[in-house]
Length: 129
Length: 490
Image 1: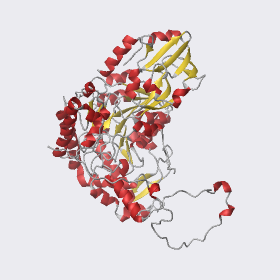
Image 2: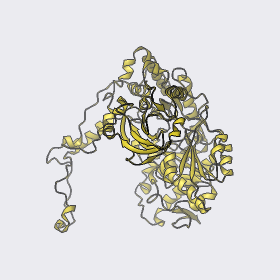
Image 3: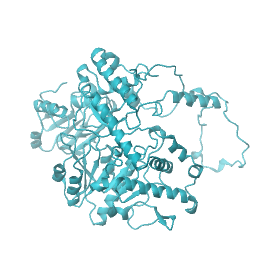
Image 4: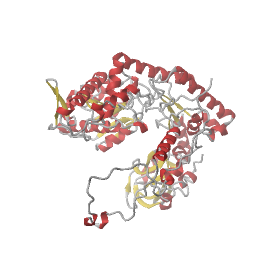
């Protein structure tokens, strides 16, 4: 399983890529593997506000339906439309083609609540122990 | 020892629409006594432009169709069906016979109360039996499913708090509770607070104390929980919740472990639902609708759904209006046929028999657990009651997942257990044999599970590509979910 070093991670298995004021959010390799084949995605509309730790969308796989939790607070700038049409991309490429939403970061201080790739991997280990 | 799975000739069967032959008729109708009506007065938008594409088949086509489909099926009457959390016990034929007694089977839901005295008496007595079994004060039999019982119970809890001036905002639910609990609380407009269970797989009073305040309307707990473990702190947990004015809702879906042994009402539970289709053996799955009666304590009595059955001088009447009632939750009188079956089941077994049912259900689950411990990973070591949860942790080393193990079980002649639930166990295999199984069938199941574990090491490909002996091989579940086809087209 891959966990790129330039990303930040949450306990709920989302990743964040920060680029200035903009953050791109997706789910991790571990999350997509746990979910299994993904069949449906529900994402917020552009302009909607999301709040750190709160659900912003839904992902449905053949195994389960799960909430997607916002890694940071902010306003949705863009959603990955092609992904909604082809949710299987999430299983194939969760870090590049499989990004979910881009937001304008509301509070940069929240970044300190996120994990780096090392502590995230430790978190997974703990969860599966 | 041999396992029951073998091969056999199963006949291919196309859809009825595919078998349709223009002009073929399977019955003849007598001349209609109703005069033809003139449809030209109807607006055009309401008239069908193209005739419906109904299959045209003969009687023998229809009979063969359904017989062949039934031969492709697997059912409790054919063998072990260890779906954890579902309590797929054998449905005794006496209960079926009772439900077919003409007085019950042909009764009309709109007949007068004088005309349905027998039905009302049966429901009234069933309510009393369920109250006696659970230690609750009153029971309503109207909800048509477990989740419907949850909703009814939560609506009563909300009405209770509203009557005190504040409906409150939150409901606490442990992560080992049934999956429908958070949905029921959310539909009643409560915010759900998820509480993690501890390393032993149970809830502690301290964990509840930490989040309990005067905005918490209720705690929803499943006991025994979805790991099959008894929530042994239930007494203290109820005290903590009551101290802040909250109520305790218990999901009774796993009551099959407790009959005649524990009365949850005495532990402090305020609302409890029963799954008649689990514990009291009314058919479910494809076999029939559910029934989810709800038991309550006296303080919730004003909020019971209408109508209430009132017994006066040996006659049963219906009370339709009550000031604080949550109102009706179901048309007519619940899923009445299920109530007849559950009533018969309780009467047939009696108190001693019901206790024996739970004892055997617990014994069977523990027999499987003990025999498969070590072969499959047991995420929680605490003793269990009516079901046990393993994971695929040991088999993952050979790149084999829970799903593969479940599919391979079919080749050995067993229905797979519940998989990937509860969510707190990654790759869960949740096994509930119920009391229906004799030791010989449990031994065959254990043998199959052990053989599969060995195959995971020696010949993993066989497991990964299973099932091999079934009528169809591994189905493409993803395609079925992604490309939904909900109607037949030529």
